[in-house]
Amino acid sequence: MASSSTTVTITGAGGQIGYAMMFRIAAGDMLGADRRVRLRLLEIPQGMRGAEGAALELQDCAFPLLDGVEVTDDPRAAFDGCSIALLVGARPRGPGMERGDLLAANAGIFGPQGEAIAAGAASDIHVVVVGNPANTNALIAAHAARDVPADRFTALTRLDHNRAVGQLVQALDVRPDEIEGVAIWGNHSATQFPDVSHATVRAMPVVEALAARLGDRAAALAWLDETFVPRVAKRGAEIIEVRGSSSVASAANAAIEHVRDEQRGTGATWTSAAVVSRGEYGVPEGLVCSFPVTSDGSGYRVVEGLDFDDRSRARFEASVAELVAERDAVRELGVV
Ligand code: NAD
Ligand code: LMR
Image 1: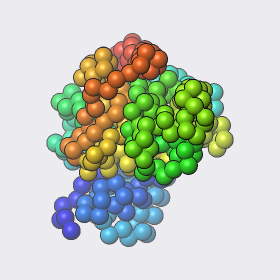
Image 2: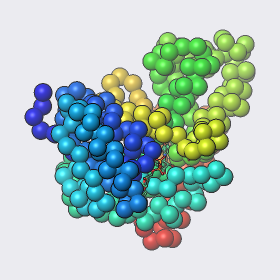
Image 3: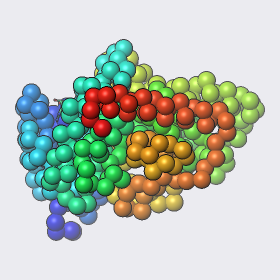
């Protein structure tokens, strides 16, 4: 058993996703059974009682890997010495709201948190932003954390990736681990492009497997265009509509898998994550954009050299255009 513990900070820890993730993290689901964990829970004053109550429950679980829990409303204390930060705390989208409506409300949260990370986090810090609009919140935090390498900041599109796999599982009647090569491109929003053109199921191209099931290639392409892409891209809104509030357990699960695969490696396959663009696929440098990514355990890197047909390229570019518009909107607020 390793002797030192990894400090993991969860913001918005008194909220729904924070509650759904912290017990799994403390149980070892994120970093593995060989890494001890110290949890820091950050809240705003109104959320402190919720986080404090969760901390009491963590004690009551007596998790063998958990070395301690601290609850604070001070970002500097929360990120001091932290190696992994899950930035969840934000205002969730309600019925009828789009992510753009949330930009201004959240800009004031992620700038100060980026500064606090730069001031005190450990040198191996890795950050994933969950709070929406996640890509642009990550851009704000990365910009504010000036001395921290930009590639330490990511945003969550693993939930979209898992949703895409989930839809294929239903359509093809296969197991999730039989599907490889799905990719989410662009923004964590309804403009995202869930792409199966490089995906396989039991080593057969997904498009061919769909054609075999639905009759022919034209039927497969129609299902992808008319059902699959909009269903995945709008799944967040569907969950809000059905549950009455946004996704919780699936989001917590995706964030845990995002960090797990970044830290422990993706192996022979890839996943999807929003990372700071270095110009890959023509995406403007500095935008936090979702790509297919791999990790060797040191951080996510974009899978390069994949080809697009014209329609796929147009979809991806539309989502990148939305990211550019969000960046321009927060530029007007003076935060990037
Ligand atoms: P929630 O309202 O239950 O919890 C949010 C918590 O954040 C609250 O307890 C609030 O007090 C706290 N908070 C607000 N400002 C804070 C700050 N400055 N510092 C620390 N804590 C702060 O919401 P939730 O359901 O847990 O969702 C959290 C966020 O995650 C929302 O923005 C939601 O839209 C987003 N989300 C993202 C994805 C994704 O895939 N990227 C999926 C689902 C939800
Ligand atoms: C989701 O994808 O479930 C979340 O981002 C919530 C939302 O606003 O869609």
